[in-house]
Length: 428
Image (cartoon, rainbow, N blue to C red; front, side):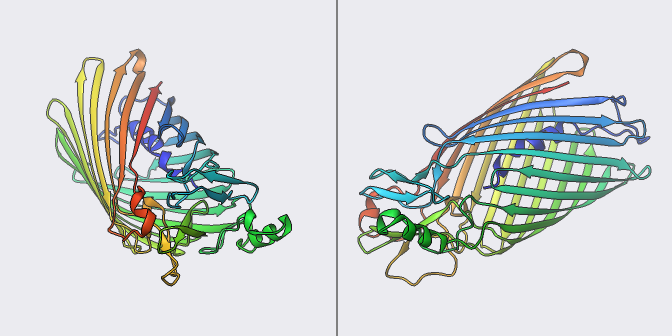
């Protein structure tokens, strides 16, 4: 699985180091020198779930021509266990590990968690920004990230044009990513049945059945997106921006760690299938943000996203920054809601025909999330800054009304999740 949920800290650092441009086109308050940002994020879903540790170091160099070079290195480490997609049962359940080497068991009444969810990712981003003239500029960048079973290569570029005495900026940008997925044990064939050792007379028979569920050693995915935006200075205290983006994803989009339970009329699991998602996805999104300084600084944003998987999402984000001399406090509140993908099903039944696509991954089901946080900042001498952010994240999958046969009526098929996030950063 690509570790994208933890890229927000990198984006935050990038925004924090964007220089202010004066009317003559020069960078305000910056000499041609290196500036650095270091940050660390700790993410914890609690006992027996995922813990993540992320470190980021960003170096930015601005020369005399106002050209900016940015280098960002990121290291992520994940440990713990993640839901494998199967439903809890009143009896012991046995699952084959994704690699085919070994198995794990889940006790009765417990949400099935795959404890092989461990990974390390190293990422490097290179970004170059330069003016073309007094009113126009461009940016271009390269991206590479590597995990044990995932390689991502990307490039991006954009143009911007100032109008109205630099109070209005129009921008056009795009990116392309080329990903290679290399699961240990091979790529599962969507909706093929998991092979379990106890069902076969010998290790050779099991291995042959396991290999029959694999389509090869790797697969690929490509993503490209295009974005058009406008930023408008309303007054000395108020600035707004909005953008519209369109993205296409083609290739392997299954999560090779996720399963579906196939249950009978009593709700008892008869076997397990590997999930299968469409190999194409189109997404359109609209984003709006407003910042207003009325003593404190109010930062409010809204994002709407819709795709051809029938997922529609709304995100409302609000921050309020208070400054007290060298100190600052910034409370944060975020609400996110989404509808379910058309092929999302918490389980399948033996009484119905096998669908063309199906996934029990709650992340593409109907879902509400809430984030509540507070950030403390302190401004040191020589332009150095430090900050500490603490956030609580609550995830609440929604019961879409699927009828639950037999013993599934006694099980919690949509458990909520509470997560703690602690982030520290230092600018020097």
